[in-house]
Image 1 (cartoon, rainbow over the protein chains, first blue to last red):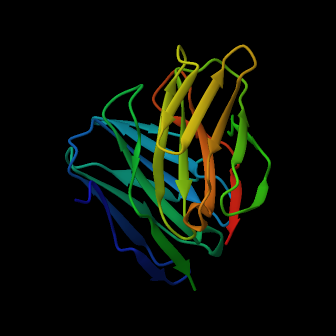
Image 2 (cartoon, helix red, strand yellow; image 1 turned 90 degrees about the vertical axis):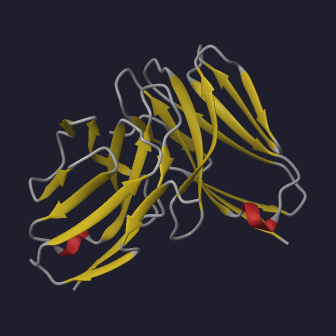
Length: 112
Length: 110
């Protein structure tokens, strides 16, 4: 059974057109993460939520926002996608510090 | 920022051979995790090793951790073509986030 679900798996948007990626989890984990991964690179953490507490990485562009309306769902909003934002976006969850982190299958974003 | 650095960047072996990947990191950690990623897919968790552990096994996988050298290794024994993937180490710093290394691309030829 899928534990971390990401929708859609593939997303195509136009330059400057806002896009929202979604992540849901059935694990009831406290912590949820969003990573950006470009081709042949390591995942790069954008931000994470510990419960409702939002933690932004210092180098995450302002163009990226996130919402976590409840424990199960977390959204990544890209307000004005640029060509450089084309990447795989990975959602992950963890029960707490020191626990295993579980990843979703990712959403491949294409910007035209 | 990346903490884990992996070595080698790429590894090509024959089916049945063993594959060893190394990871080095810079600061103290709570634990270290290894992940596999098939091309275009999400990351699959392989093993978590805590800072007070030295070795862990899971099937054909063996992970070692040397905190004095700030390094870890992942050994895959009797490799299969299906093991072809990228392998990442990730360190759990004090705090709530993992920091990933650059990864090792493993190719197992049949």
